[in-house]
Every structure is written in C-alpha cells, then in structure tokens.
Image (cartoon, rainbow, N blue to C red; front, side, top):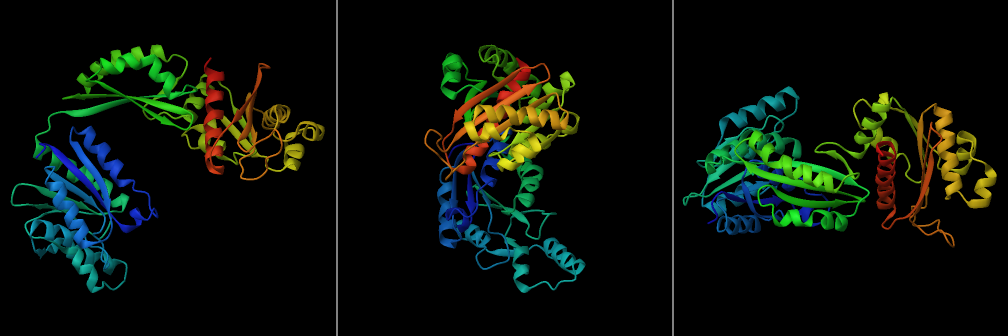
Length: 417
C-alpha cells in the first residue's frame, strides 16, 4: 500500500453524463499537493451503491485512504454513506449534534423537516464527524479494520471546500505525519508558444528535481510552474528563486505576471504606472474585454469604459467610423479596427484604446474572410498605432475568448515594451 497517498472519488451520475463539470477533484488535489500528500489516482462514479462501494474497495487496495465528494444528501440517489458502510462492513449510528442542528435550521426557516433529512445525521459507526456549517449534511471519516480510511464530504463546493481546508487536510497531515508541503510559483507568459518555451528552458527540466518545472498551456498563453517540496515557505522560496530568475531571463519579454496575476491585472499595473486610462471598442468579442478589465479590483483608476459596437450603425454613430471604410474594406478590416480604436479613445477621453473586430461564426464568412478572422488594433496618446490580423480556430465562444486573451497580451506588450 503506498504510504501517504489517497485516491479521490467524485460521486454523481451527472458527472458521467457531462451535465456537471467536476471542479471538486482539482480543488482537492491542489490542496493535498500543497500539503505534501500524494494523490494516487482520481475517478468519477455514478449514483450506484454497488459501484461506489466497489470503487472504494479498489482504491483502498492501492492507497492508504479515499476521499469522496457527493452523494450525502437526503434523496434516494444519495448513496455514498451506504456504499462506504458496505465497503468497510459497517452499520450506521445517529450523530445527535447533526440532527439537532438540522432541526434548528428547519425551525428557523419555518419549514417542516422531512423524515429523509434524518438519514443525513446517521453516520457510519465509529466514524469521525465533519461539521458542515454551510449545509445540512455532515461529512465523516470512516475507518477500516486494516487501518485504511474513507473521508466523505458533500458535493456542493461551498460546503466541501471549507470542510476540506479546515478539517480534512489537518487530519491527513497528522495521519501521514507530513512535515513537508509543496510550494508553487507560477510564471504567466503571453505571446509565446508552449514549444518555444520548451525550447528555451528544456535543459532546466532535466536538472531540476526539487524544485520541479511544469508547463501548462492555455488559449494563446502558457504558465510555467515551479514546485518545491520543503518544510517551510522560507526554504522553498530559497530553492525556487534561482530557478525562477533563470526562467525569467530566458523568457524575457513574455512573462507578464506571477501567481495570482492575470493579463487584465498586468495591463492595469502598466496603465497605472504611467497614469494612463484605457478605453475599449468591441465588436465580435461582445464585452469580454470589458468584463476582464473590470474584474480587477481598482480598475476604475485606469479604465474609462467600453463601447460594444456590434452593428455597423453603432460603429459609425458612436465611434465615428467612416461609412466609406466599411463599404470599401468591410467591418472586419485593419482600417475599421484602427478607426474604432481612435474613435473610442476620443469619445471616452482615454490615453490609449483597444479595438476588436472579427468573424466568430458559425456564419458570416465571405471569400477571403473566413470564420475566425480577427483584427485587433490599438492607438495611444503618443501617436503610436498598431493593427494585427489573426486567424483563430475553434467554436464561436472559443474564438471570442482567444481574441480577448490576444488583445490583452498585445496591449500589455505595447505598454511594457
């Protein structure tokens, strides 16, 4: 049995049908990794008592413990607790504090508590209850006779996350005697491909075991993760710092931020350093740029506003785009993109402006202008202007999302360099 490892089992038929995206498993895995606890494997299983029990038995044959999420509610298809009892050969017992809390909650809401709610307070015999101040279902840690264990938590993220961080992770660290944790530094890049990053820092992968390096690609940007396993944040930082410096030197001009920084927050940092304000004109990105920019705290210091000029009449009437430019070159063109940028900068009194126009599809393509064609332009108070043409692949939403990332990256590079 691997020492100090666990398996994660997400329970719910909706996961198997693709009706719900499992965000619990990555969250759990990340928190465990940060605590130096190895995850042996992950899987999803439907709301079937026999299959859940089988998944738990199989996991316990490989790992020291199992963590489950979901299936602790009051309905007939909430079967995780029963499956845990089957897998560990346990019966249930009433956990009175949970029952009392549920009764008080329903009384405060002036709603009757149905008999099926009572089953949520019945836990595997001998288990350790996990309190749930954000919902009705308590979690629990059940113990096998051979020393294995099963942690079961609700599937609702707002109930599961605090339970994991405040109760489960401390239990696991004590259980496994984990003295080390994994500390991570993330370097965010934009405007450089994953293969080029690999080419520039490939030799560092081979000679870096602790810290380790990983590259994760996103739509038109990539993250370089540096992970150090250490007994303290200070010693981890000392190990990470020289490797981080080497990577940033090799990727100079492409690293826009670290850790929690985003393309939008990096843009705001550059704008605020210059005392500039930004205006945006959007066509096919449909407000996504404005949403990204206003999602940053303090963005009012450097963002004046946006005009979503989807229809040509708005481009002409609100942004001052020349109707002749649209007639001669089309709405998706270098000329119109630049006129949109100049128009929104003047209209909103900004020092710099960004504009997007394109064909997100699935219709709208013309000869010479395919779906995915985009023009992104910027103009600034120093008289500098730039327009770039891109041909993007993917579905409608993917194209618009990628264009948003490219536009923010283009603006950041203009400001930074």
